[in-house]
Image (cartoon, rainbow, N blue to C red; front, side, top):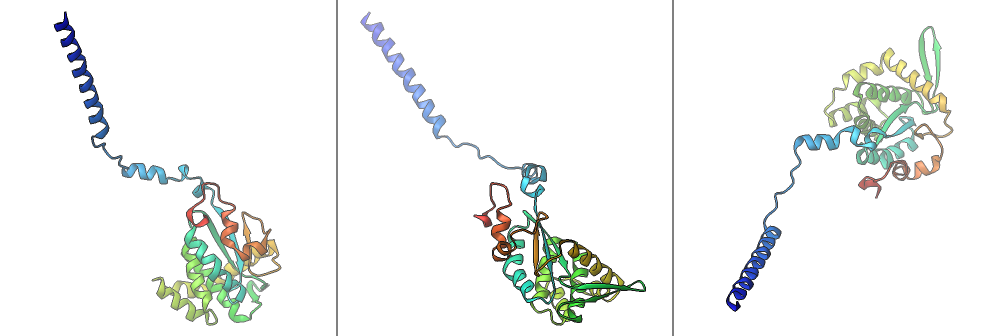
Length: 234
């Protein structure tokens, strides 16, 4: 009996040691890394999985091409926000400001706050926006032009070269009826909100809180983005 008891005890110990060794092996062996396939990435980036992209904040910028306050807003606020939050905000540019429009014999004539050169510069901006048909690029190009826009043609050629664009279609548009028609359209759009100050910015159709928007455009945009907030808002 003592012999069998000893053997039985020894077998139990061996089995327990085997189980322990197996557990240690299972815990310490290399685990296969999880790999995201291209199809996984496409699914994660698809609009239907991304509420931010589906529900972009809609910002409309009512401005004038030669307005110092418009220039300040473009350089200090609009340009940086457009670059940082292009996936979260859709920007529409409306170059017209405090201009007025007259129609005579089927032709449009404009009187602009900063003179005839501004009317022409506004047309250049309007034509660039219409031809580029890209919100982010339109902001970049118009920001480039508004920095030094006293000579609208010079600004156009300088910025077209910087962004590898053909300036001729934009100039042709600005010097012909299409440019006037686009500026008239922007004038009609501007008259709807009747801005008291240029620039005026609407967010999702509201022009409330202009002082806060002009002071910290980034913060006001971030307030309208659903959680989780993107890094530029943190």
